[in-house]
Image 1 (cartoon, helix red, strand yellow):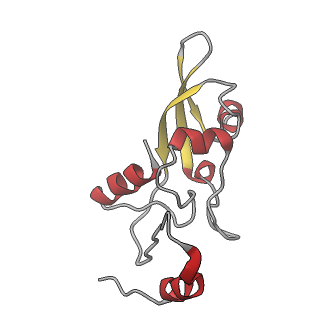
Image 2: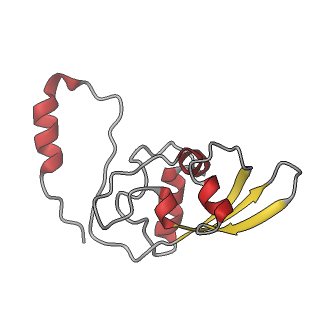
Length: 129
């Protein structure tokens, strides 16, 4: 599952991913983010990576056995950032929350010829109802 699909699935359930807990590029897979411990852009006191909002992990070990581990367990800690050495992640349980009023937009393949104007436009406050 990609970040974009996860965010949409959470939205359909009336939930939201904690702001900045995952990288902003929506095409990344959750398994890839988890196994590399890729960071979001969180600040002090907020989740700064997917690992911070994972509560449990289902994974397949090297012998084909399906395991479930709490994120706080030794296996859970090893899987987060373990580059797939421990096993293959098949399912995550995440701690999501009620949606807020923050809007995040990812822009790709945009020419930088008007970079300063584009940044100024992105910094304007957008009011969501």
